[in-house]
Length: 340
Image 1: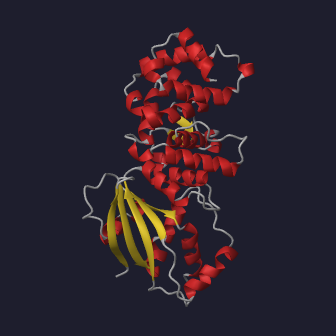
Image 2: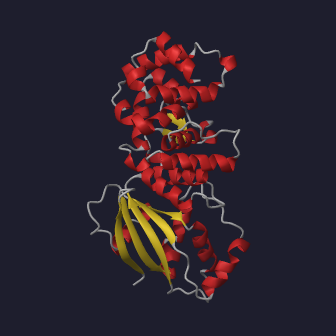
Image 3: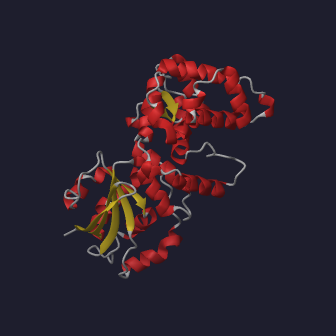
């Protein structure tokens, strides 16, 4: 048998299943290595010299260290009875690598060597989960602190792979594409969407602070994600995007959400409050944002850092929407002046 499921447990945190499986090297070369190319922001394999020892060890009969794969299921599975070898094979198109890209790349380089042990087994863990946010949470707990892939790079990879931006209701374009495509009301830069996701998943707008060195910034983001109680959230980022997409039909709200700092601040707040915000109508939202903008305009921009201040105040407004939405302009001015 080329593929075998050994053990299945339910993970109460990510609310999905954890499979321990084995597959022949032959099967892994054919079915697991192609998964590497599914990742849009895939980092380049490390220099060959980093993994030459592992190459030689594999050819000499070592057991390849475990890798971790993930299957993004379309629904919450009721039980584990369907999680057999056939399920894995039928869902390879929904599978990607959470941990082990370099090991698979190493295997790929020696697959044609006559001494390559085709019948040896590689052992894998497979997470089967219907939540992109909880898969990200697990990936951070797997890889945080490891080098050379940063936490932020991991997030970009997972976001780009899981979201499949073509499936989002908002048209995601790169900066280069945006210069050539006809602008439509539902267009947003992919870079901004990913920053919005970072803000959402970490419950923070401090995701790209240039004053902090990159390695420490990545460490802070990962720590915030782990502290943001991702597994207990009721919603998903895609739900937030669907809500924003509906608001883009309104001219005022389209212009408001397409300001990146507004979108990022809003997404950061939705980590905690989307359950309540999702029921706001566009008409009401226009009224509240008109008041917010009038209050914001009362700030002396020569005395504040405009971008980060806007992010923080938008996040604060929506995190305390139940209270702040009842304020008039002067009351809101008084509030926000004390928040900056």
